[in-house]
Image 1 (cartoon, rainbow, N blue to C red):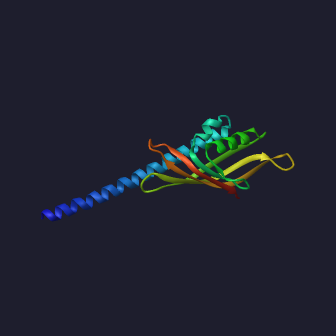
Image 2: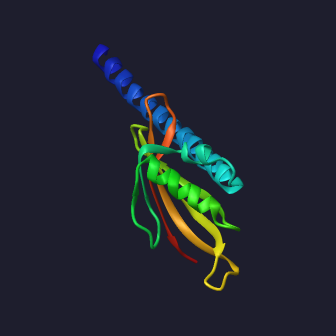
Length: 154
């Protein structure tokens, strides 16, 4: 009888721990989507280069269509400054999906974006695309984008 109680408590413990992990992962997905949406809001305003850049990790990589791979905060900062200096430049995105690793240290977001830039004829054009951002959770719990990839899309 004592052995049955011990086994029952072990099974209950595993079930409860599993439920807690799922709840934490679900909550963390929402947290990550919130961080991503705040980043999108700040970037869309296009005013604060340092605030925009703060969402990337120091060792982040950007892979943008038709551009060289950018590595590190300084290269990313220059990219953001140059982008915001383009007359009429505007960027928006909305991530609708997030996934978190079971240990809660890595995640990714998937969404759609739109960037308005001068076309070849000088008229403003909006290029729509899709993107994925890979995020790493730091030691104090903050999420930072470590890999940012986007392409042209429908």
